[in-house]
Image 1 (cartoon, rainbow, N blue to C red):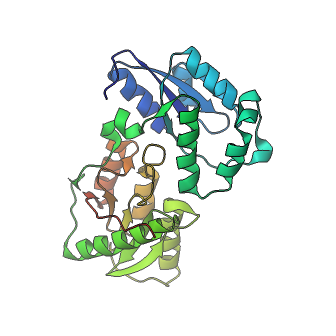
Image 2: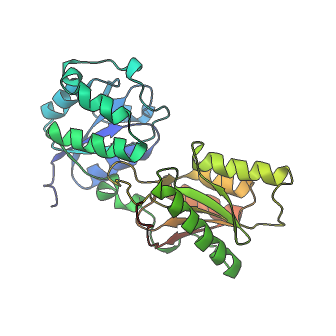
Image 3: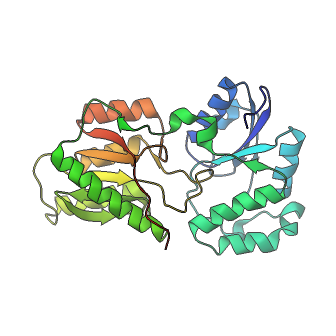
Length: 288
């Protein structure tokens, strides 16, 4: 159901610029964003918007400040550099009331943790909506996104890398994979997508992976069990730079289920680097 014009919307902001894009999109839609910025994570750019900076564990204050501003819907978006550690929490009375639930959430994998956070926000009286619902222009569309397009060999690599990425997503391990000349050579783990690409570049530099010119594809897609309201995969300028530096021919992302941060910059960078960027429609692997 579409929100009324002028209705407030809350944004719980981690790191990066995506929360700022969401705030701007909300304003363009006639809504009034209020940001709760996670201390030590949020981009300084949030200072341009109505906001309050809170530490992990200040759940009661977060609830109160959103209620004060008339917020009923929340967007939870942004990078979290370090998984929350209970020992660093600044607990308030609101957190103490839900401490058993918080402890249970921290013991879970990423997918279960984030789904649990959505449920917890619901218990506090808020509805969590996805950043892509507020700012649909952030999401990759189907087809070529820049000037360059994949050839027949690259299409084969896209299929192989996408299948590998979906497979590791089933076990909540990662969201990306790289295939070169029809062979999967890397799958994402704890290092993240950009770290995986750097690993491919290092293996090539060491002579462990060999190809001439540009070859191979990075594929990124959502995990089949992923709650896109709070955890939609992203790529950004760093991803394109890493792929180009590693000698890859292009990047394929799941259309409708991956966000492109700084979209215009990403596309321009891909065009200048001579690599393709495409949105692909995929069939998710079944959850084991």
